[in-house]
Image (cartoon, rainbow, N blue to C red):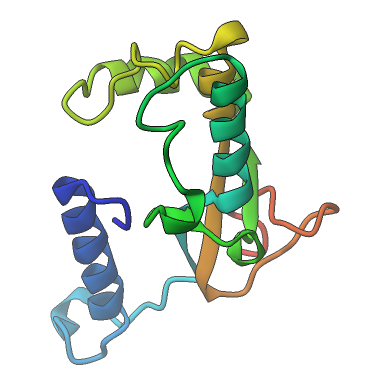
Length: 153
């Protein structure tokens, strides 16, 4: 919920509260014993990836709000060292873009970011980044997790 969309902020609040309630032995004992979620992630946008995207847009000659952005001041930018997982989702990019088109009030996939030459903007969306905020990670060969379910029994 860290980048301003009210529904995303509320979804973050609800999910965080639900995780806390699931772990509380006194909450609804009729539902069974408490359960601590093995791992909790937050989505993240690495500062370096945002900076590279801004630079690519500038080099392409596009002038818009993104090219004027100060990546260090962007509230949704996450320091790279906090990123714990990097998931290559390029094989699902077409479905992701279709889902984003269905939510035009949230994002304009026809806008300048996605209109970069060679579809650079949409290709950049083919990788998902996360930060582990609870539980134990299982880093892959590159030092970041590449499977969010690794290490879960």
